Length: 146
Image (cartoon, rainbow, N blue to C red; front, side, top):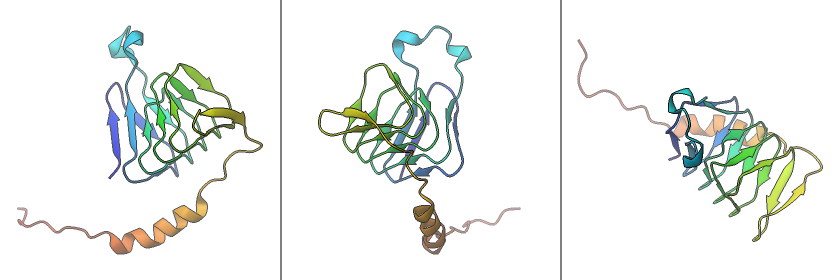
């Protein structure tokens, strides 16, 4: 089961995002930036993002076509633009803005610019659309409604 927590303001998720089991998306404003709690804009997550198993994402901004690999952590002072890949187990906690097509990888979370954007996960999405309905069981109400 994935967890989505809108602690500071609403979270708007774009089209064709894939959120896998045990992924956690949290929107909270950093404690040192809380000036006007009533005027916090929503977190808008772009389209075609992939949140893999066990990732924990608290990013301040998320663009389109990003991949958050298994067990990665992205802190709430990080802004992710478009086409970025955060590698498995990588942790980004310092205040920073990832430029387009940045790949974070390895034990030391090294960064380099990718040659192209990650491809949308069309084949994986099509497979899930075919398989999931056969495993989803709708529970019928036990009491009759009046």
